[in-house]
Image (tube, rainbow, N blue to C red; front, side, top):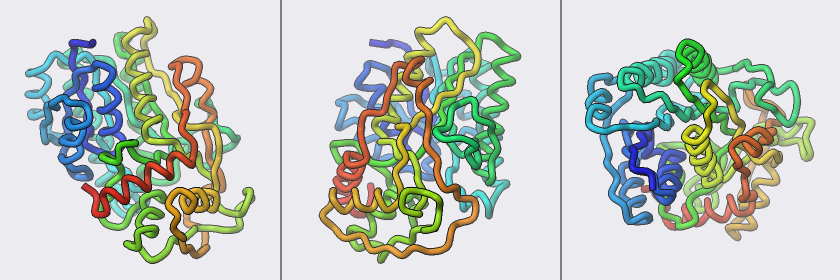
Amino acid sequence: MNSEFVLIVGGAGYIGAHTCFELLVSGYNIVVLDNLSNSQKESLKRLSTLTGKEIDFYEVDIRDSRSVDLVFEKYGFSSVVHFAGLKSVGESNSFPLKYYDNNVSGSISLLKVMDKYNVKKLVFSSSATVYGTPKELPIPETAPTSTINPYGQSKLLVEKILVDVAKADPDWKIANLRYFNPAGAHFSGLIGEDPKDIPNNIMPYISQVAVGKLEKLSVFGGDYDTVDGTGVRDYIHVTDLAKGHLAALNYLNSSQECGFSSFNLGTGKGVSVLELINAFEKASGKNIPFNIVARRQGDVAACYADPTKANKVLGWKAELDIDRICQDAWRWQVNNPTGY
């Protein structure tokens, strides 16, 4: 049992809520801070039901330094897990300033408060988008970084800030987690992905087609140099991803090493869009109508991780396959047809 508090910033969101579950059942005491711009407080109520533990929650935006300061003043935080950020690639192209303000300025505000209270252990939610168009597959952490949209650029800018912070002050211990394609839901069917409006990610879109909420799926590109011409991605179960954050936090608490370290969180296996559709049809027993349309600007043919470093250093490995991802995503959709 860990008596110190961990602050989960953005903890009411999709990945944040699943990570809160893993930390709670592992004995961590958590406090959740979230502005609820892309999440629901209901997720935390359901977490309490699942774990039998009440969760201290503050509806605060990380750019509101004074309010964040008051939360730090109240608790003796040992570390922070930072999920807070806008995440739509398409929206970032239309509203770049919104993304730089929220994702970059927000992170700077948070880091300043952390520094003030001498809280220098951080797990940061980054993204495989920082690799841009992959030069090699699978992608190792040493691959060159370059981004093709403001969302990815905002993540890469925060990474660079974190590198400089760790260089300037050797007391900082930062685990930078680069996610590939999170999908699925908690096995209970109580927490899952609840997108507002039309989903940006493919799994909730397929789920909504399966229940008749959306008419059909548009598959962007059928002429890539891949197994069946459709884009290939590394889909990682959100529970595996959450356990990756737990492993990273345990690593920061136990390792004597300080500084900034990046880790890929992925399965190391690529799955095409058509393979994903087939797996979902198998899991749901539903037909998923789709059209293959023109390639989408900024998309790459294939992108999947080399997770060797996380396997060796964090002692973490993705365990749940694409069939399990689809089964759990379908259970969530059926149990929560309108989301939370």
